[in-house]
Length: 211
Length: 211
DNA sequence: GTCTATATAGGGATAGAC
DNA sequence: GTCTATCCCTATATAGAC
Image (tube, rainbow over the protein chains, first blue to last red):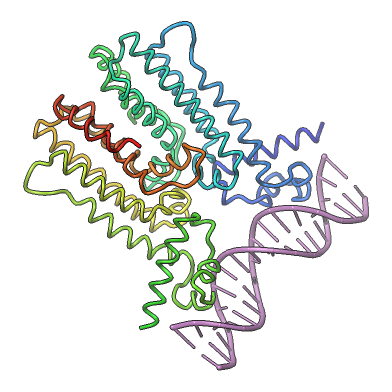
C-alpha cells in the first residue's frame, strides 16, 4: 500500500530530476534526499539506478508505442500527421532525459539499446507508411527514394530536436512551448513534396508554430 | 622539450580515448595509465579534466572555423556544397566525443556553451549564404522562409548525424565510412528545391554515397 | 618533469535494527 | 517498509621527494 506509493513516487521524482538536471548528474542519494527517504529505502525498492532508468524506459516505451500507431483502414491526411507529431513530441518531452544523453545511456545498457532500436524501426515504418499514404492520396508527390530519405530525416530531426534547441541558443533550458517549433521544423521536411494547395495551407498553419 | 611533447601527447591520447569510449567514461587516471605516466604528472600539465576538454575544444574550434569559410567573390555551386560538407563532417568526426555528449558537456561549462553557440551561428550564416547564392545562380528555387527553415534543418542533421547513426542500428560503433551517408542525407534536404537538371545530377552522385 | 603517496569527497550498494 | 550505519570503490586533486 504505502509500498506501492513509495515505489511509484521514486519513479516520478527520478523522472522529474533526470529531466531537470540530466540523468548523469542525479545520484540515488539525490533522489532519496528529494523524496525525504533514506538511500537504504530506495535500494529496497530498486536494485540500482539502472533499474530505475529501465522502469522509466518501460513507461516511455509503452507511451511511444501508442503514439506511433497509424490510423488504419483509410488513407492518412495532413491533419493526421499533425496530430501524430504532437503525440510523439509530447512523449519525447515527458522523457526528455532519455534523449538528452541518449548515446551514453544506450551505450551502457544493451537491453535499452535494442529496445530503442525497435522504437526507431517502428517510427521509420510509421513515417514511411504515412508518407506513402499521402502520396497515394495524391496530397504529396515523391519518388520511393525521396520518401525513404525524408522519413529518415524526419526521425533524425524529431529525435534530436530538443538537444538541438538546447544547444542552439545561449539560454540553457528548453521549454515545452518549443515543441511547436520542432513540429514545424519536421513539417517543413515534407513541405517541398506537397501539392501547391497543401503547401500553401501548411504555410498558413505554420505561422502559429513559428515562435 | 620533453615537456612540450608530453603536453601534446596527453591531448592526443585524451582525444582518442574520448572518441572511443565517450568523454564521461574516461577518467584522468585512465588517460595517465594509457600514456604510461603518473596521474600526478598529468596534473602538472593540466589543471583538471575540464582543462583538457577546453584545449581540445580550442583545436576543434579553429578547425571548424576554417571549414565554415565560404568562397567569396563568386556564386557557389553544388560542388562547393559537397566540398564544404566533407570538410565539416571530417572535423565533426575527429572531435566526435564532443557531439556524443554535447548537451551534458556544454551544460557543465558556460564558456564552451557560448563558444559552441558562436560556431552554430557561423554555420547557420554560412548555410544561408550558400543557399541564397545557389538561388541567385538559379540552381535552386526557394522562398526566403524555405531557405531559413532548410538551413536550420541542415545544421540539425549535420550536428546529430553521428549520434543518430550510433543509435539507429544495433551495432554500437560508427565508422568513418558512415560520414558519406550523413553528407548524402544533408544533400537530400536541399534536393527538392533544386532545378530538375541538378536534382537528377545529384541522384546520380548520390548513388556513391548510399551505403 | 616526473614519480609516489596520500588526502578528500562522493557515489553505489548492503546489513541489520526497528 | 523504513532507517541508520557503514563499506567499498573510484575520481579528482595535491604535496613533496627525486
